[in-house]
Length: 223
Image 1 (cartoon, helix red, strand yellow):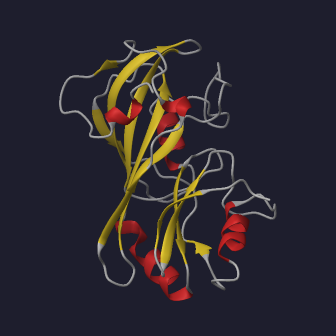
Image 2: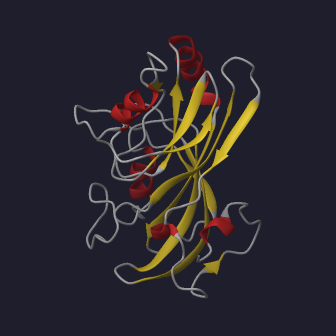
């Protein structure tokens, strides 16, 4: 059976589930998020389904529609949702903020980013905490864009360059999701605390960049 998932939001029409890192959304395995969704809501609902994908190695919220009509409306609204991600990138990213518009699989893609600060990191010497806002939703978009600017996501075995950090997997999480209710259009949001691996482990080693801070930065304080 799939590992248990936390439900971050739920009503009669849709829900938001926290997908852990190391779980696929779709696939033939009985340990996918899709399998967990069907098992959790069966038989109370006949057609729950994930509205979008999230990488196998990424922790974050996944929208679940409880009916075909809710699924249709949520997918239509999906490009308008706010999706905020955080990553640790290998090396010292010196650009404070900007955007990457590199096409992915021949399709236009755009990601806004800003660097929040740096800390020492054994394998890479330095790592940078970076906040991303997706303007499009392509496969591995953040991972590809991070690699394209010369600072791949820490722990990324596909787009990283040697040396590859192999401890605790991919250092990427979706931290915040904001959307409109599929029927009432009421604004809704969920905030996801980062996994322990994403938190600054050694107090006092993080050097925040000057300028306007991020409202999410406090989430990355040591426990």
